[in-house]
Length: 230
Image (cartoon, rainbow, N blue to C red):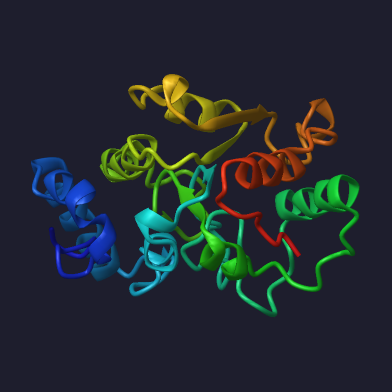
């Protein structure tokens, strides 16, 4: 598939899950779209080389927790391939500020000094956006263009695993995506739902959901080891 991902670019552990989707016409069309947009001078985030960061940092057999986002941040320098995360030195976005507040309330953790969540990803937290690219300044601009089939396949591969995994579904968009995954509700997994951590909805039930402590209790009970959320 042009400009999105080829088999050689997909991390080895995810290839069997994703390759059939990459071969589909919709994925090839997505690749052509991205190439044309960049040729026209439009800025696409995250930049090439970072769009598969979630898969690169969290191999399929290491996934312990899945957190689903909608699409990458659309401001310059914010998106680096992990849902809700920003690179070091970038101001922490409002939704992540609220995630940090819930971490402090749930686990007593001190405020984070940065918004880079690579440490979570390396421990097995799959920080996956529904669409893996966005045009600068246009939130949701690359939704429904083909990324969904690829990220659906990723979620389905985790759900099909017999390793007990936690799915944190924040907001209606994440719940809708997970509802498309056959067998998720009946598998060995823990599915946690709450409103989105956005300032518009966090006070409607995200604050106080205690997903982080619940996730660790489940992982420890199933012999998978807790996540160091700090």
